[in-house]
Amino acid sequence: MLKNANYWAEKNSNKYPEELHKTIIDSGIFEVIECPCPATCECKKWGCNFHITRKKNITFNDALDYFMRCYVDKKRHIVVKQAIESNAPIKGRAAKLIPVTKKIEEKWEIITSEINQKTMLCDHGEEPWIGTEFKVNADTIYHSKWQAFLNPDLFIAYDTSSQMLLHRDYPNSVKYCELIKNIRIDLINFLNYQNQTITAFRKYDDPTIFFKKIKSTNTPLGTIIDKLYLTL
Ligand SMILES: [Zn+2]
Ligand SMILES: [Zn+2]
Image (cartoon, rainbow, N blue to C red; front, side, top):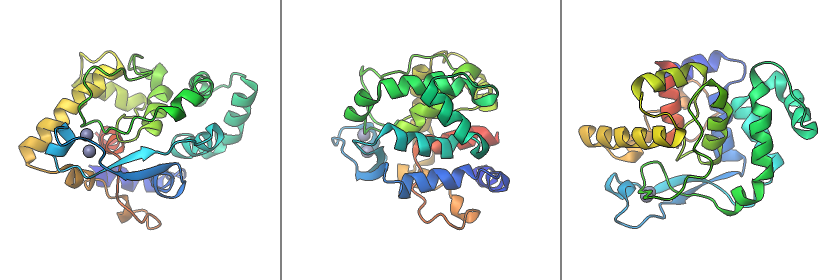
């Protein structure tokens, strides 16, 4: 299924998987860090040895440029940027992007100072997941995309069609934080059933087959699940 997702994405002029991998590897926004968790963390049970996380002190404008490459049609980048600068509404698919992005810009100082380096597999306890109380629906698509962009190993982006499929599979997950918690339970059950490590799970997604410019295959966990739902 992930092979199919990459095949069709290669045919799309935006080549989102290529942009996402370039962003993860080359942009300087993210880094692969040694797993920082204690031995008791859930991720360690599945052989976790690295996490993909955002670096500190990234500027909002850098983040926005790479966010658009990953999630916004190339032809709309200039219009979107101007709309964010002037806080003016725009029409079309990206209309809902402007208010969410303005909120991210306002909170940027907090976002860059408190980086959550955990993966979705990790123990989260009762820690508040800042900004994850929104409902999963077509209006909050760009919310989910920003969450996934800011913490790609922890959160999942969805689209118009994939959010409907997520509702089918997780009917009781009204809020985004509930959805992530329930997907986490399924991921743990899957690894248990397959007797698999998290590193092996990351390798399910191999965009290098269709995107020759991509070098590494360290795919963030959120991206793998996002792609699975885009292909279903
Ligand atoms: Zn870990
Ligand atoms: Zn952990």
